[in-house]
Image (cartoon, rainbow, N blue to C red; front, side, top):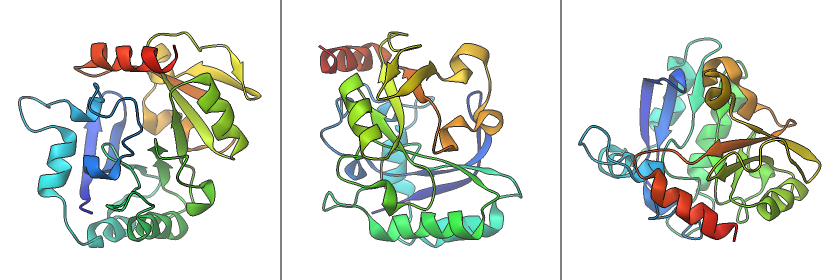
Length: 218
């Protein structure tokens, strides 16, 4: 499974971070956004989509992931899976990739790792030595993920979950959406015990994504 590593990536939401990109084949096909408006399927500036870029330019070796332990500055931030997920070609945990990410978390505890997985029903929080958020699509998903021990986030077509309490956790909208706080300063998604973070659908195909999420909540 190919993984593209970008040592320095920056946008208005994240701020300056390191990042990994994975191909669409690492995603669970049960995700309602799979082929239905996922922002990582969008084309960036007329170029290939994030997922296509990861598939085309990624490396078969995970040396670049391990090398992040040296290249990330002290106190830096790593955004895992800007596109893609933690699964391998067989639809199970890509243990080699997980091991590389876990190694970084162990050797560089000063690095903030931000990660999400739509494959949380196939995986376990115990597979990781850092916080991974279960990417949920419905309140029922959130409650199930919390019961399974996951940190949680939820995609929504609007601010419909904000302020609710689901599974004993309050839902708050991503601070970047409400206050313009960048990931490098917020770091809320890297904390194992906190609120469920809600992300309104976004990206060039957010209309399609919104319809998919609305259907999932019907």
